[in-house]
Figure 1 (spheres, rainbow, N blue to C red):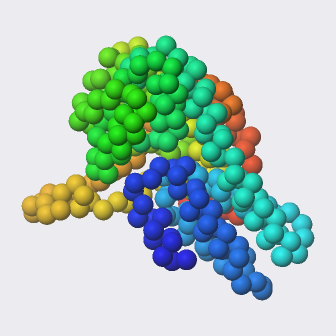
Figure 2 (figure 1 turned 90 degrees about the vertical axis):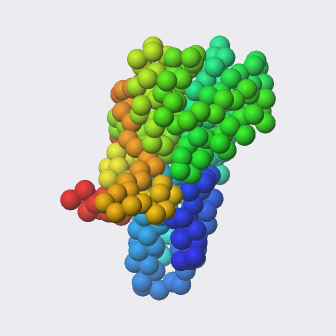
Length: 303
């Protein structure tokens, strides 16, 4: 169990939705642990530890919330655990289809786009780009994505789909927005009024707005965070040595891989349910159920 938690914590390569199967596996192991009077306390401790592994990525919270909502119902411990295992399976199973529907919507909205600028590596954005490339020639401009270089991974995948790809320095990416027909970015989490995504998304969307280029944040249902649970998300501490292994004296390193982006900067948020303005998204988040145990954790985090 601890080894899997470390593996999840140290994973800097896979995107938010791609880590969901490992999260589900960890939750399944917690639910399968020894019974007895202390099993729920162990599950609480395990859930809290799990949420700290990738605290900027909403799918971890999405799956944990599904489990704890199922545990709130009546019944004996064995029945609750069985119900929670079923809820975990039901929450994980539709994510691929949800992302595909969101990607299909994005491709429909961007149907006339011939040049698209993006950042980092989102599997849902890649699926949208693949649909666009199947319909007509598409040029994709993406930054390197330092220090983990996710942009290189997206560039290789998009090129394999038939896109013409230009990889640029991260600092040069906002300047490319004026050459685009659209900016399309993914998200690790969608909150009330903001999204969490790769650092560099904020200046890219600012540049798109300045250039009057439409910009879209693309996300599947696992990225939507119930409003009461937003305090459970935070930016993880990463190894600063990937910026500079041996900095000279009096030089400190601040590695920030994620940032919060106001949704007011984008034209719309795209999910499998359609395109929504920030106000529409906020109403949807407010209506999402939030488990009591996670609400308590969130209240303690916000103190």
